[in-house]
Length: 317
Length: 184
Image 1 (cartoon, rainbow over the protein chains, first blue to last red):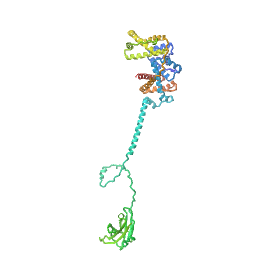
Image 2 (spheres, each protein chain N blue to C red):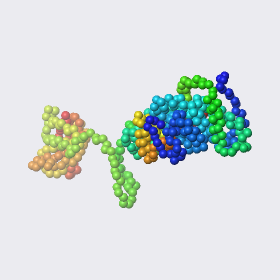
Image 3 (cartoon, each protein chain N blue to C red):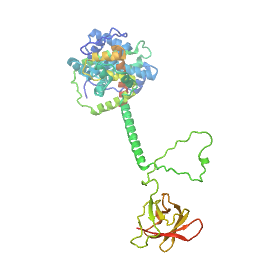
Image 4 (spheres, helix red, strand yellow):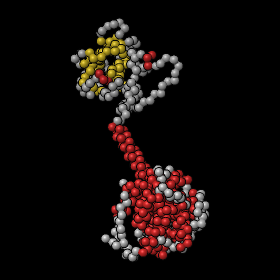
């Protein structure tokens, strides 16, 4: 053994201590001890087993440089006397080199701390073996690669496929709504819509009414004919307030004509809402008017006469 | 040719007769033969014989040639018969002139590398528990062996002696596995 002699209790062949066996291997027994051990070695199987183990132990001590200088010399001179013992030394050296750099639980134990349960389980199931480490590393790498591929693939898909705009279709009057909704009590389906882009802003509210007073005795001269600046709205009106010479109630019919007498628009002219006036209002859609001169022929609607009561002129600029 | 060396070829039939004399079962006979040879080498090496293996083979040869004469009448432990022949062979060896011992200086790198490879394979064949024990037992450290083994024994909940015996038995299995691996 090393300098510190280890004494172990041996139930088998107790008369031979481990130290005595090591001295036998070094050839340091006395003649009497030697004879006794040799004879027992041939007949006692347990002693044979102990000596075999002691050979391994001695080779390990030599490989790990645990022997004293004297013991090292005795090992080289007396012990290495067979090919088998030289193989033992080679294996002890290989074990030393193999476990020299591998972190083991023993290193943890040497630090004064007990191995954790996870470390024990790891060693119990052989997870500390190199092959397992390589396998776990390969598995972890495969998982990383697969995850990265999935992420990239999903991002490409998202860019390639944009969700189609959901167009809310207004139901046509002829659609059969009964087929769209199931019969019976049921919770209304959830309606999800994607807001469609807003149309350009248009002025909402009542149309613009441009009131223009027209007199029947107005001259048709270009310098004196009333000029009308039309409103721009599609639904705007030009209210031609036609002045009456005779303060008569009744209904009138007005005709919008070109200067050539071609009819453009006709409608009933109503008594003007303004009080104390003798006017009738003739509303003309501004969209019907373009630049030029126009004529309005007023006639009574009650008697069905087509005789013109008064004529009025205006110009659109 | 060396003056002190005589080589006699053990005839195959003598060898077969020897094995049969040791044990009728060929497998057990082979095991007994290896154990006897190991004992002879251990004793002769302990006695200071430089050529312990050669002397052990010489002893076996002589016993094998004598089996034909003694197998019918010999009684007792057959291993003891080898011990008697060993003493005679050892006495003859001591009378030989001391020859300078040839020291092998060739560093067999290939064998060492092969041993390492075989060790890896054989370690993988161990059970996880055995692997754990052997790792801890051979963990490289600067501390005294006794302190480390004391700690390891406490970890396993066994005595130091039990730890030593178990670890060395595992070591023996590794040895056998590696030797078999080296042969292939």
